[in-house]
Image (cartoon, rainbow, N blue to C red; front, side, top):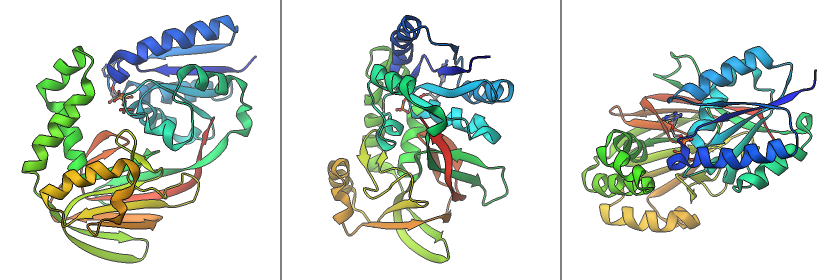
Length: 311
Ligand SMILES: Nc1ncnc2c1ncn2[C@@H]1O[C@H](COP(=O)(O)OP(=O)(O)OP(=O)(O)O)[C@@H](O)[C@H]1O
């Protein structure tokens, strides 16, 4: 039996861009007479279930599994793959942020990315590091992330935006990204920083007045911010950025400089590197993994070197 590609499409990604991107991709696949199967997600969490079912049923007949959507969709696909992480994954950008494409050096143009996927030798896909995390310090079963985990201010921005009424309204008029800026501005006057204990490999640190901690596999974050400019997805470790003792005025300065990675020069920014990380704030703070809200701290994070294959 000829091997085929599986596409998992989030039609709602990028304010319905997923559906539009898929139409173009499908046309190209038909034109080139490519063997594939495709599935649309119908709800949050569905991409994970689909990936799990497809890997279970077709792992022997599959060339690869391609996620069409944003960072949240590929996050779910990877979490559904479980024991089948040896199956190569592809990514066609249709989200609003698409840091996965930036960080893994993939084209953000859907048709270029498709072209690249179709011409690649799947068995020779490169292996990259993957993140494993457990909530409540090692008691929970592991979940995975490919790009980053954000703890604190940005976790709260993600949570409050998703719960807001204005996100839906702005999405309808194609201005969904503005909803994050609204929440960010609002929270920047209200957010209460916290004290943090963090263990990175065998070293322990304490930081006061912490706004956020980002643990990243790639340098990009939140739609192109260079939060950890030295992060590489194949170096066997994570880069960590702790923002602490920051005045509210300087918070805006940080947002102005982070897209170029120049925030790292600020004395309020500490950068660390490590493989095995435990984060314990003095109160529960909201966290996201690859932009998806995952709950509240504490959390333990571990690098799984060369664990995923990216087409
Ligand atoms: N059919 C659906 N209806 C509503 N939400 C969905 C559906 N399918 C998936 N989702 C959810 O859509 C959310 C957003 O997806 P995704 O992150 O891929 O796009 P995005 O937010 O536009 O992009 P990015 O994360 O790159 O900014 C995810 O949380 C996912 O669970």
